[in-house]
Length: 310
Image (cartoon, rainbow, N blue to C red):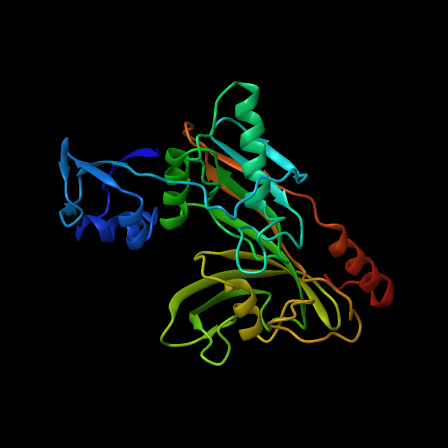
């Protein structure tokens, strides 16, 4: 049974069930009921209708059975870093992060479940059906690069809090079609689900605020290599923002177009660097990856064809 402790830092007055689902994002309100969540507030057990405020000390525990569709699978992972609390991986392009409709197997969650199972068998610990792959953040299927996951609930909460308060620094690289008018800048919009296509997102005044900083690293006649630093973490944010800028990501089948020079290009978006404080540590750790071969191949072809303009 997962058990966590948390000191309320937010300046608010909110029902406990809403605080758990909307602020901590540990469980949905329906999961809170089905998984028998128990709450102790400042040393006393309370109902979920109780209000929490800044400075309160929460102790939470709940039943968290493994969903039947998460199957442990021995899938090779490129591990950048691992300890007893978390793991950092260079996710390959094409791997789905979490099981969903049409993707029940072959995901990062399946691989993490297997890895945790093996680790526990080596030290004679049983999972007891209470392990949930601690996915802290997500990368799209076709986006490669650095991603972090937690091995326990307390570590998951610690890492998620940094993402929620925007203390994590993430750098991406992208090869885009065309080039921004400015060599560097900030894209700030509101993003919402596209009413015409529920699988897409779009810039909309009714959406959530989204901020991305960008810098042109290399420029060719028809393409550019960009460094991207998202300040917020909206779904498909970088892809939507670059389309909005008029420079869609090369190989993006959803927000881009079929490119004539690179018709077979996979999506050129890669999470290159992550800066975050790990559980049990005081200083930030930095995790980096090399530039993927698919990037190097496109860059080499562009350089041979026309030469790069600094």
